Image (cartoon, rainbow, N blue to C red; front, side, top):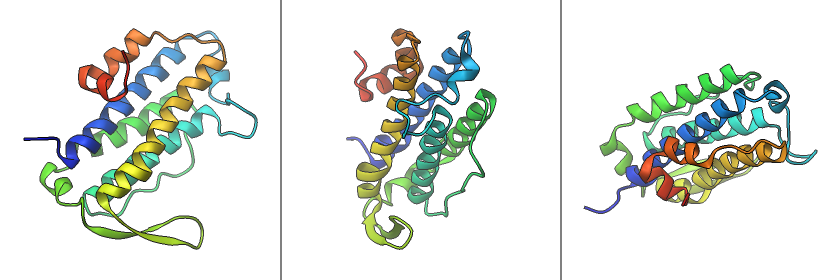
Length: 175
């Protein structure tokens, strides 16, 4: 049996969020850890805490769409490493509870999605996953890593690879 929608979405997002959590755990150990929470790649970009907020909200939106329920909208944004981890764990729990059969049935089901304050589009579950949700989740993981590197923190890539697992490392293209 080939890869299913579940395999290409839920398991991928689990690997991404586990990697994000591991990167944050490494960052917490650094002497400048608290300053990192507000660090940005560039002045007009979101800080690290917002990268976590957006990665987890896109992940929640994806699992909601693929399990035919309304997404939970998290209040505010995390402001501490502990709150970042709590948000990630909440979404991982939801991902772990996703029914594989339900997810696999949502690929061609078209739904309405907001794209901005007044516009909507009609899009299938698989198309939403692969053209909107996953690219955004990857982006916010990569931006989190980029922020930490920009701040002079050289995270251990071997540990990141281990956190993602073998399959996750392959999906994240980590050699």
